Length: 377
Image (cartoon, rainbow, N blue to C red; front, side, top):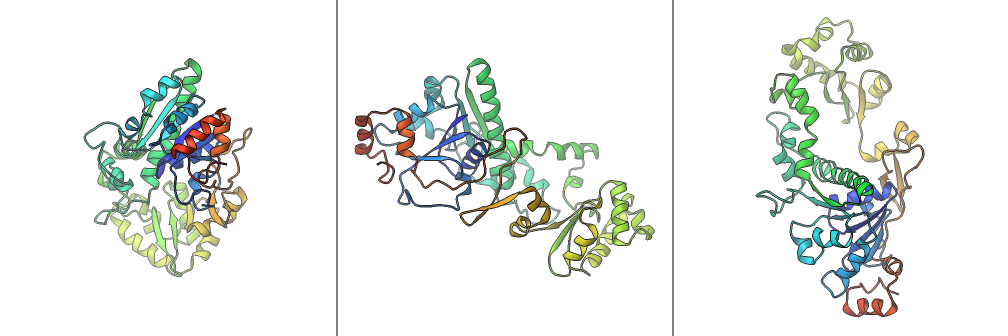
């Protein structure tokens, strides 16, 4: 699968990384910049791709991108609505050159609607979708989980799924299409499981908010060393296991506590005192690996060396940068291992050579300024 990615910020590059992790040949079209040719190992979202430099405002650059499009299965762009059209690379033009192309568009608000052309960021989109409200405990300041819910989950992952579905369709009948992936839409779609639970609870949205009912058996607690643990033994059998493990199975207040909402706050206070009496390592020794539905709250460096994550090979380090390996996993076609992030423009000559451009055409691109200084040899 071949993908042309028009370099942008945030979820567009993350989507390209995901497809590259799964084995796609992703060619980034990047702007000329002073750091062309220099290492940039911290840009994990660009790993596994090939990078070329083309100034799309210079003569010949757009035609060159269209030549790449003619060989591609998909295109990714993350500009504001109308920008690609003004550059001469809108979906109508690209689909005319490649009728089977899946044209993936990544925005916050979507391609249509009264907010479609307004600026915004991750937390704006999840605020409008309802996701931020539902993830905020009552009477607390809403605090979105840094780019994860909107940019990545609601944006990049939905665009990747849309592109793959579009490519499957195009391989059946040769017809491409536009995929309109909005972080607003995706973060709203992510709520459907929560909305189902709320509906089963009688439609009370306040009860759908975390900690709204002060359930002592579904929250995080602070330990004596200042670290945190998380428990969620929602099911009766898991709750019974939890009580046994922490020595509360003989306390009838706790035994009957799951079905006694009026006692939840007081039981929560008692558990807070209990968990604050020992360091996290002691609670891990007692609860980890059992059916008590327990986990320590780890920072990424701690997570990288946790025995379970080590056994599964969840994390790795490339060029001194900690990063997660590709997911999901396949039995017959393993994903590529994380590799170096290509310097900006490092594949320009290689990719242009694959287009069989003549020496004269290459010289014209170079002389027009379409190629970066470090991208042509």
